[in-house]
Length: 116
Picture (cartoon, rainbow, N blue to C red):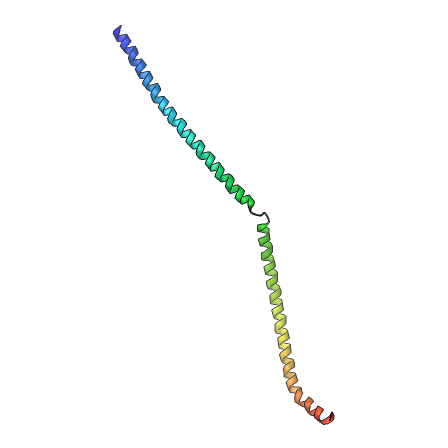
């Protein structure tokens, strides 16, 4: 009887040790799960903050940038056209100045001869 009692006690002690061991493991798993849930909530909060930051950027900003680029291209083309017109007018002005220098002495001679 003593051997069956001692066996029963040994089995109970072993089962108790196993249950305590598994309880400690279970507690560790629950703690790890709680830590992961806390980290998940923190990450969700950061994601919501970043989404708020992204949504606070004006939606038309991208399209405004494209419009400004197009406007800059148009202005550049207009500037090139105006520079060509200025070059043409400058050339014409130089030709007229040359003609004026050529004809001025003749005009002054005509004026001196006939307008006195």
